[in-house]
Length: 141
Image 1 (cartoon, rainbow, N blue to C red):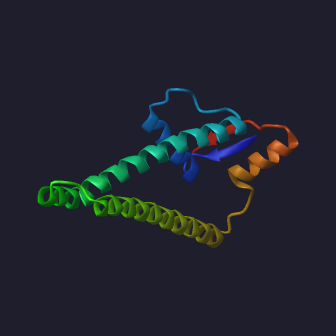
Image 2 (image 1 turned 90 degrees about the vertical axis):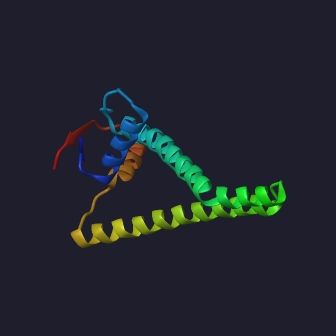
């Protein structure tokens, strides 16, 4: 039996994704179900949040530039399109940097606390190799 802490980062992210998608299904009872359900829910959640943030950045950041260009020239130029593309690329690079920084910070915290073990992904890989999927118990710790 595998114990998952309800205060762990992956469970909190999974809970946020389930709440965002409005899933009423019960929590998975096995590690394999948890792993795949986590991947699907979090992928959809991150895609939707990134899409909303990108659209908000485009509306706030580039609408005035494109609108001004349209008002002055009565047409959108290639410069406006390039600005929008570079803004989207910059936003994705910023998201990647934040993701990388957060991962390094998490590793430093784990090393300072002396945490060890397989983790969810390691346990899933081990279970896949052994062709056995252990049950999960959720605990508040």
